[in-house]
Image (cartoon, helix red, strand yellow):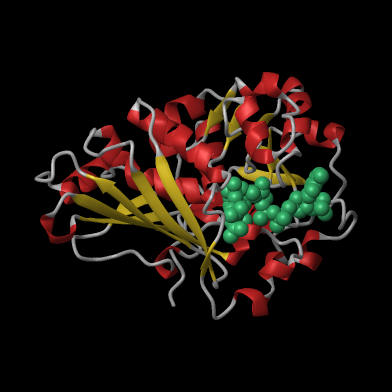
Length: 343
Ligand SMILES: NC(=O)C1=CN([C@@H]2O[C@H](COP(=O)(O)OP(=O)(O)OC[C@H]3O[C@@H](n4cnc5c(N)ncnc54)[C@H](OP(=O)(O)O)[C@@H]3O)[C@@H](O)[C@H]2O)C=CC1
Ligand SMILES: CC(=O)N[C@@H](CCC(=O)OP(=O)(O)O)C(=O)O
């Protein structure tokens, strides 16, 4: 059994880790932290977990966490980068769901996150955990930086086109919408029901912190620098991301449907829909799955890709467990075969 620790167990990605790990045959959560709920039983705060966890929240403490084989950070940025070096030194593996280790360049990180990086020397060994792109590097890692929720859907959507060199990588466009749980569980006026429901709006248009991550990741995929315009939106729903991607095709006659189907043929968590069928957020709700459709409207020269995922599963905790399975040499799908919830 892999001994698992979770830092940040009371947030939305923390409780999603608990839900998914409850049915994982090779992992057992032995430590879970919360400063605010220290001492409270996990199944008292989250009654959906009753009968599955005999565990209470504790303060984040390096000594307790060091006894784990792997520690997940389901915390805001600026937490993992302070604790990970000590855990790595103690022999733990670390899977960070936050943005702390996603950007290779610590100065760029500081520009976007507004403070100095606390462990720039550890950045060099972090592996970006998008398994469909680099599972072989993940398998050798001690420290995995899980992609952001938007970047997961957007990179999976653009990857077949960029790998084939079929699009103008200087002018990639992504318009994406996220459900409100993407903003986390802490109280914020902007996320109250009367503020978000019955409404739809863009935000962060001048520059969202996922932009440098997207340009870095898509550049790695393309093998050359890329430039992107990224416009995120707030969707008045609980779970789900829908990304619509646009790019100019350099070879408009390409059969993009066949390209996508072949590219993802062996990927258990990426599903290319049949031509003419478009993905919805509801069919991936609760599932570690990204569903994708591709079209070239009117056979012109712009390709449109639609990608959906559950921000808390393939966009966060499911992908984090997928990375754990790879790190420990387990089947990648272990504990992750939940289907989307319909209706
Ligand atoms: N929500 C989403 O859809 C996605 C989130 N992510 C990322 O995952 C991370 C967690 O997100 P989410 O679950 O939404 O966040 P939440 O705000 O819902 O939860 C944050 C958790 O971190 C704990 N925490 C906060 N500050 C500290 C600290 N200084 N030290 C230790 N623990 C702390 C909190 O508990 P307490 O304060 O009691 O200790 C809480 O359990 C974030 O970095 C987020 O950006 C990534 C992809 C998708
Ligand atoms: C709706 C909403 O607010 N979404 C968050 C992104 C979601 C998220 O969790 O960001 P990471 O994946 O980088 O951790 C935002 O726009 O900042």
